[in-house]
Length: 234
Image 1 (cartoon, rainbow, N blue to C red):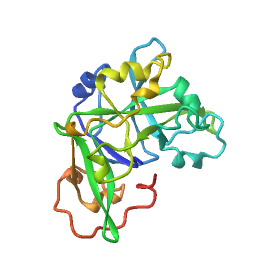
Image 2: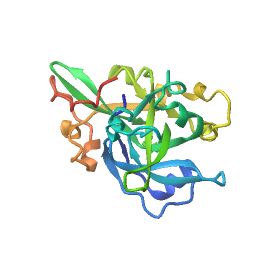
Image 3: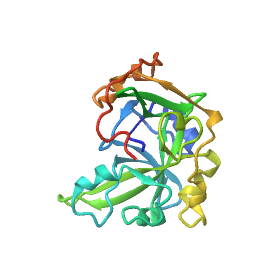
Image 4: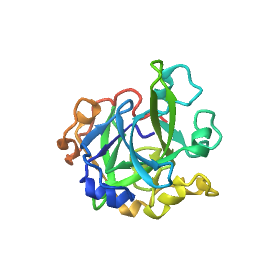
C-alpha cells in the first residue's frame, strides 16, 4: 500500500518533468495523506497535459457513501482493470501523480519504522494514477484520484510487500492515452538500482507534521512507534 508520499520541487522542474506549462505555484508537501488535495497531471480535452487539483481517495461515479474514498486511495495493479471501483477510471481517466518520494513502514520489534523511498538523484517522478469526477451534494464537481500499487522491487521489498507503480518518463504518454493497448504492461516494479530508501523520524506518523525535517535520514532504533492505522495495510 502507498498511504503517504511527498512532493517538493520547483515549478519549472515540474513543467519539465511532466510536459506541462510552468504552474504559477506548487506548494511543498512533505507528508501527503489520504483526503488531501494535491496536483495530478491528466489530459485536457484538447489532448494536451494539464495540472489539476484533486482529492486523494477515488470516488467512483456510482458511489453514494463518501467514506469509500478512504478504501480507494490505492488500486492494485493485478485487478485495476476489473475491480468495480476502478475499471471505469482505468478505461477512461488515467493520470500521473507527481511525487519526490513516498513512505513505507518496516516492522521493527513490536513497532514499525518509517522509511523514505525515492530516486537516488532526488528528481520528481510519477505514480500511475486514476481519477474520477462526480457531483457532491451541493451540486459541485469534485475530482478524486487513486495511486496504483504493485509488487515491490528488491529495494522496497526490504521495507514492505507493496509499492506504488512508478512510471518511466518514456511511458507517461502511453499511460495517459486510454486508447493505447496493453496499458497493464506498464504496471510493474520500478528498477531498484535507480532508487534509495532510508529511515526517517516517526514524526511522519502524524499528518499534521509537514516540514522538510521529515526527509532527514536517521539511525533506526531497535524498536519504533506503531504506525498509524491504515498506512501499511495491503
